Image (cartoon, rainbow, N blue to C red):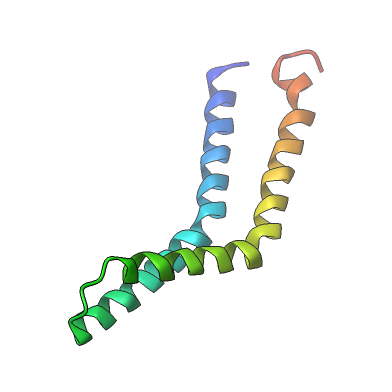
Length: 91
């Protein structure tokens, strides 16, 4: 296995991680901005008001996009395991 192969594998893994994490991060960002605007307008400065809606949003995203996330990760892992013989030079 040469360095180009390793770089390609790491790049693919990082792209997959970003693609899978993006829905949860985006939901947290949107909810955080909405709650921050609400807190600024009402002048309520309660820390749990930031945390609880983000956790609910993350749970909803996980329920909705979880099967897609799992299929993406399993597909990548399956391709990686099937490519092991070629990666180590035996196939």
